[in-house]
Amino acid sequence: MKKTFLLLATLLMMGSAAFAGGGIDISIGPKVGYQTARLSYQRDDIRAGFANHFTIGLFGRVEIGHLYVQPEVLWFKSSNAFNFSIDTTTASISGVNIPDGLEFTMTRNAMNIQVPVLIGYKINLLDKLALRAQVGPTANFIIPEKSEIRSISMTENVPEEIKDAEFDTKSIAWGIQMGLGIDLLRFTLDVNYNLGITKVFGSEVINNTEWGQYIDTGNIDNTKQNMFMVTVGFKFL
Image 1 (cartoon, rainbow, N blue to C red):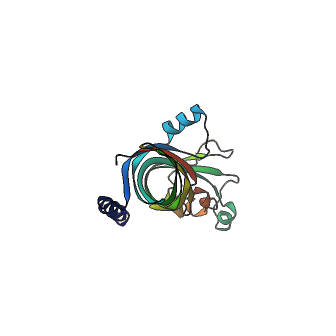
Image 2 (cartoon, helix red, strand yellow):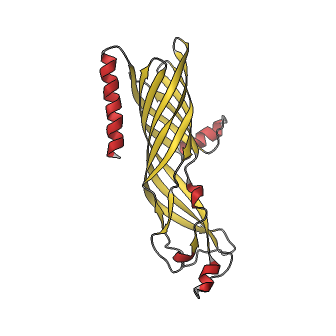
């Protein structure tokens, strides 16, 4: 994580030095926005996005002609969930009697610090209006918080044998962001899609409960972070 922030600082310092010589333009500023699994222009959906998936951070941009590099540091809360079941066949072979049809969902809440580094191309449409396209890698640093297990089978309550199960949470989830942006005066609008490369949950059960070794983690891959991110920024420089 320290290396990532050092890279961002180096890029901005290089841009500042070049800016002083008149060869490169540099912009720095705050941005706010939200995440969503589905883009919508409906006002209620946008309000719900800000209320439930609020995002805040800083961005920098170093421009050389039509090309630019845009590193960002974004903070947001996330809630990842995946379904799992109990492998009764393996348990039966081991002599453990587990009822059939037990299925559960685990929801893990977490704080996230996301660091994308985007490379883009900018087209000036009018004097103060420009259209951008961008793509780049992103590192998502995950700080897990409370987790919750719920039953989604015919069993109403979560059995005591599985209540304390916890799954390994990756400290970094890697992804690729791609999207479009608009600059109007000092304001920026970015709509990016985050394509998750690594999954959030690992396959290991941390607190090995009585049934922990029989948990089927076949759905772990579904915890990759695929989402849209809509942000509005303001360029101080």
